[in-house]
Image 1: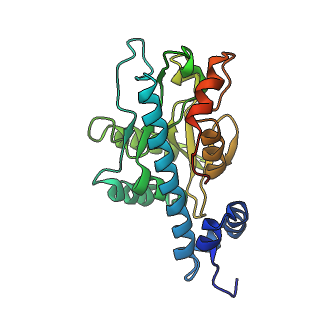
Image 2: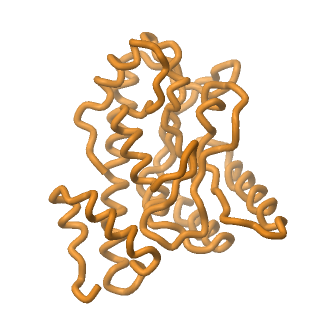
Length: 245
């Protein structure tokens, strides 16, 4: 690309799909001087928008009497959001030292958004935990000090012991069944190493991380249908005025 791209201004002007397409087409070549700074600026803006969306959703859920809790039998109350802690950058470096390059959207999320856990119960929508509520935790600021890093360290060691390891899947969330406190499959995660702009999210299906988040926010943070008509009234309120990514 001979001309310095104007990705951020185009993104802000509404050309989001085209900008993400161009970034993905470049792969890890967008880390070249003159491209990397502009690509990172787009990813950071995406993360700022995602954080505002999360804060709006949590505020609305609080107003509606939603109970945020762990995915256990006791439904232990928990905080739904933890902004980046002082060790966010350190944790990113720790991951990069062990796994190689991290996609820019992942690093932007860790530095700007933090950890989110929307699992809980809604007073008008009792099976809301069945709707695969948004969970995305990398730094682990909701957990005891070092807990999530120890978990990641164990997973990395298991991966490295494999004679022919494929890409590593960094766990970021329980699957939709475990969120509802039902035995299920493996966790959702991010494929690493990856030097591209947008991360590859691995859930029930794989897709770019921004596409996954767009789908989640389009559904107010609860993307899975639950066969409860109350879901649609709740989600209609939750998704109002959320910012596109």
